Amino acid sequence: MSELPAASAARPPGPVPQGAPLRGVRVLDLTRLLPGPVCTQHLADLGAEVIKIEDTGAGDYAAAPVRALVNRNKLGLCLDLKQPAGLAVLQRLVREADVLVEGFRPGVMARLGAGYEALAALNPRLVYVSLTGYGQTGPMRDAAGHDLNYAGWTGVAEQIGQPGQPPALSNVPVADLLGGTMTAVMGLLAALFDAQRSGLGRHVDIAVADGLLAHAVLPLAAVNTRGVTQPPGQGKLTGALPCYALYTAACGGYLAVAALERKFWNLFCQQLQRPDLQPRHQPATPAECEAVRAEVQALVGAHSLAWWTEHLAGVDCCVTPILKLEQALDLPQFAERGMVLPLAGGGRQLGCPVRMTGFEFEVRHPAPTAGEHTEALLSAAGYTPAEQAALRAQGAVA
Image (cartoon, rainbow, N blue to C red; front, side, top):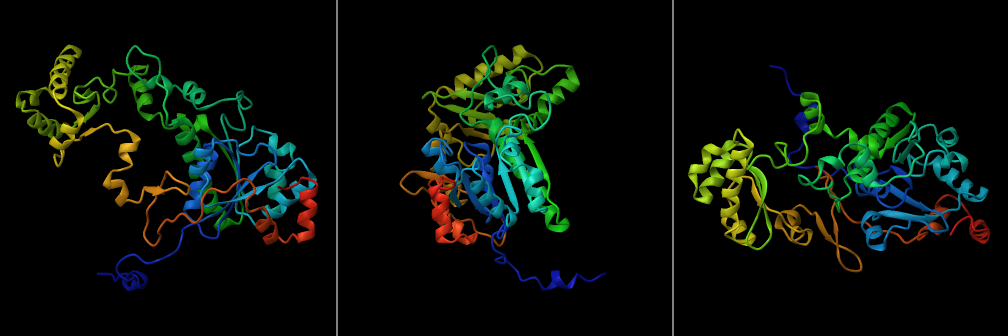
């Protein structure tokens, strides 16, 4: 029998403090609103030094409550990149940066003299991320868009909603956050990993529409099988089956029944005191599905959501309440996981969803005001007080 490697054999039991996984990584964040700032906040939460760079005019015009939730652990700097002196500040910062993330329309950064080629010439290991609606290429590259437009063009919006109703609008913008934020994080970290070993960065071209389309896996499976998607309400996971559906409780709240597996359905039927429903787990015809659904609805509708929550506590049958966010924030589960934290000035914020050994997430500082750390950052970059005063006088920084 071969022996374990010495390093493994010597590893002490339990987690070993290793520090933040992205410590020492410097990120220049030229994004605003939602997809880009959430992307760079994830990096900041994992230890990267993120400098939020805003223009000296409107800056990041996200609503104040949103801005406070998506920019923590960042430093604030205001630059006017239309001025040579402001561009020169960015160029100096780029020389010591690992990542730059920008969210302007294609061509804007190049016109400012801050496109990928220009900045990569100053720092070949720079990972330069362009996050746009439709990407840097293609006939739609210059088109304006928002979350709903990307969801519409990709066929995802059509899959969200109720039968016979228009596509539903979500307060959680899935295109911006799934297609944009998380795809950008994935591409950025992959390029950063390679830059650390090769010394060469990359231009990472992220389109929100691409990222959303890439995750439309289940609708595509239907297209490959049937030639068309299944409309909302007709798919296995969209309400066609009585074992995977929403039911209205007496109080008007909703119970999520997700008992796809027979063992879960059997347990749920026991709690309904209707073991006769157990064989009718996944009925063969739409008519029988509706008949079972009507019976389950009558049973669920006899009690409040609170009653069902208590009644099903400890019953492992994949049946749970549909909570409002303000209720979810009070769950012990999320408190134990560190997912709900106080927000400076009142309110609450969401924690970092990534947990790993050797690292404890912390809020190092709240979201910066526009240009809050301009002086400190310029000083760290080597600008003298006189040079900083000159930059401010000409409006290159704020």
